[in-house]
Length: 430
Image (cartoon, rainbow, N blue to C red; front, top):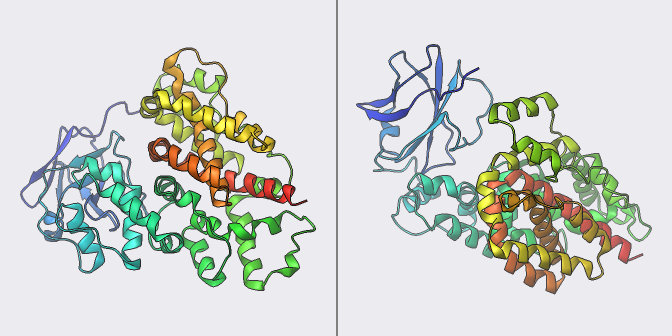
């Protein structure tokens, strides 16, 4: 069991990079990511015995680089964006930026991230804006333009439904998409009808969480209620509904059918989370591995548990936000709003209550409740509730950093909120 990082630091070394303080004696693979071009596939290279990584000439002028180290030979799987807070991920901030990779919109966005020029706009720029907004904290830490994430979120919010459609070109995970949906206001975007089912079908294949929001007007037809006869739908619309169950899983279909959420207790930080917090980190990881969780549908219990675990791992960052006075005020505002005639939604919100805390140092345990509360308000706003729309705008500055630190939990909660709000709407229509 390794208890130290693979290396201490990475520095430029002629035509490549040098690992200083290298501790790993065996085969070592490095994946390099260009911070000013976060949409590009990483460069995979083998670290030699002296700790050196050769760089192609094009990579020597792309600006700051993120270096993720892994023991062994490269794997054929598509690598995910690395965690900057991982002990085996290093950032080379001193690498010069003199030219962008390639040409076109991507190159102009790279120039923008380097502080040269303005943010490109238009439909072809939207996938790049999604990526910058989703990975904004990491890009800022690497030296990218400080205002870039906020400017991209604003541009996406202004693009409306087109932004949701163009998310398919970003290749982002659902959690990354969810963090942007929360921060841009797109999670609260009202979509009255599915105008182009064929276009939405393409989004289902690449960005299913965004496709779920685009398909929202059709979700009542999964309830089985007499007022929503599936036979009334066009075949293209019915095909979209077939995607919902595959993405969300059986738990979602149970909720949409009007039954109680079978996994409603999963995702709350309670006494078990408190006990886990008392263990050393290595023991925490051992406990989690022993659970043998296998995520499947987004709302299946294992996926929800995995999302909660990811949020738990960032609890020290979340604690800072949960300690703010307005955090408690936001929870109260959501509770008051839902208690005013929305008993089922209020019950789901209270189900995330961690109970009595053992001091202010446990404020992070309230994060899952705020996450679901913000998602419920956003989807109520998307359903046309004007009061919810006003409250969502007031909550957004709190939800945005929470979603950034706990993106997988945010994805679960946006999808769960949509199912709960849809079920309430069906119930109210009789």
